[in-house]
Length: 67
Image (cartoon, rainbow, N blue to C red; front, top):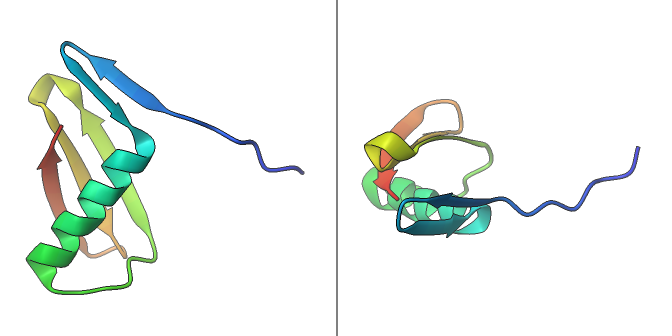
C-alpha cells in the first residue's frame, strides 16, 4: 500500500497551527523537561477548548504545550 502524503492544520478561534509545528513544539518541550534526546514515538492529543496539546513520548514521558 502506498503512503499517503498528508497535511493537517488546526484552525480554531484565532489559532492556526500545523501538524509539523505541534510535533516540533511537543518534542522541544519534552526534551527540555526531561533532558532527553531521541524521541522515537509520540502521541498528541489536541484539545482546542483548553488551548492545549497533550503528548506522550516513548510511551512514558508526558506533558502539554499551549496552542
